[in-house]
Image (cartoon, rainbow, N blue to C red; front, side, top):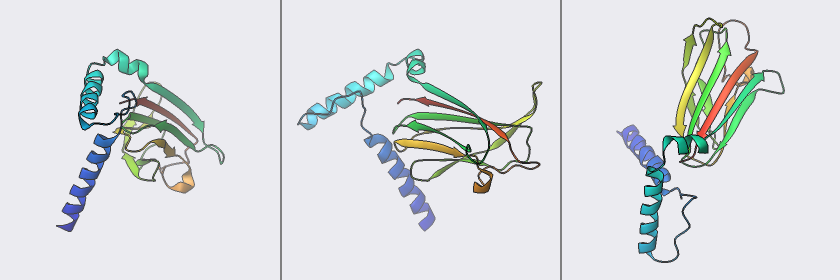
Length: 169
């Protein structure tokens, strides 16, 4: 019972944070609640009239090919509250991997499940996920073997391809 209440409170908290995030394209309301309400409606109308092409232009993509070594073991991207973040990690010639975790600015994790991909170019394990940024800051995939975030059967992982895409809200 207590667990159900805690889950409900967590869901409500996430919903409140997402709804309370200010729209950076709308100027701050001057003084009256009526002005704030009309500005919120205007901001929602503008966002709903965006075409997919507008969203693609506003999106930014970052691709990292990381030769894992003691000095290069992570990939990160900056996202603002409400941004839609897509992440994909490809690891060549691996199997039996556990979930890979993306960390938000507060240290919370989003788990990405592995999927084995067979292709003519070679076999690899792919981790994919999408989420809305709950906080402004850097989102990180730690690929350091000692962190136990990247665990795959067989020999140690030497290279990872990480692709991030951020679409502003």
